[in-house]
Amino acid sequence: MNTTYFTVTLQPVNIDTNDIFIIIPCFNEQHSIVNVVNNLLQQGYKRIVVVDDGSAESLQTVLQHMPVVYIRHAANLGQGASLQTGFEYACMHRALFAVTFDADGQHQAMDIPALLEPLLSGKADVTLGSRFMEKNPSAMPSSKKIVLQLARFINLLFSGILLSDAHNGLRAFNQKALRTIAITENRMAHASEILFEIRKHQLQVQEVPVQVLYTDYSLQKGQSAFDSIKILFDLVLHKLFR
Image (cartoon, rainbow, N blue to C red):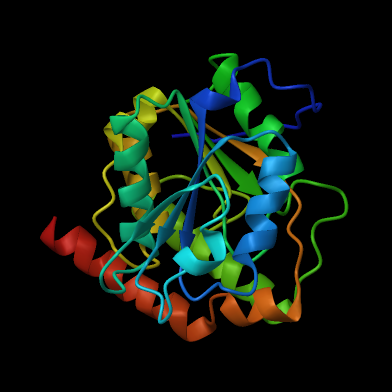
């Protein structure tokens, strides 16, 4: 399957924001989640679903006065499980579109219209954010770039889809994709499993340039080289036993 790379000129989203569900998987993000939610609310997004993946302290206290849906896992299951919970909630409430958005402050709400445009125009079922399609890509440590390049080719090896970026949590899905994709890899291998599902169900996918804001805090939450080895191990098991 070929992935289309293209640049979108930002336009106002011509859709009722009640039809767009923003799914935020969250684990121990007490220091960032309020700002993340506020930024989304300021951009007019009304259907925000925070999935608390068994944080040490419930996030309900910091979110109780905010107009969000709060779902809490009784135990830490992993980001893949949190996304699947969000997908199921969105499907149950007949979402037309869902956007996955990280809780650590890396993602920019202003990028969401560009992600939605190919879905609205029928050009794609899934859009994936990419940090490497702009002339001046988001600054990041060299070690992280190496990890991401490795992940790109791991994805190609197992899914047959070559992307310019890998494991970018900023994505958008139309209703067809939401109802079709099933995430069973609870932890970080879910990012590659989403690609397996896209290929399996012959969904149309496009990459869209996005900006990622790196801070000392968000870098601490990122994947290490050891994480990538664990992801590769999970992918091998997935291929052998599924």
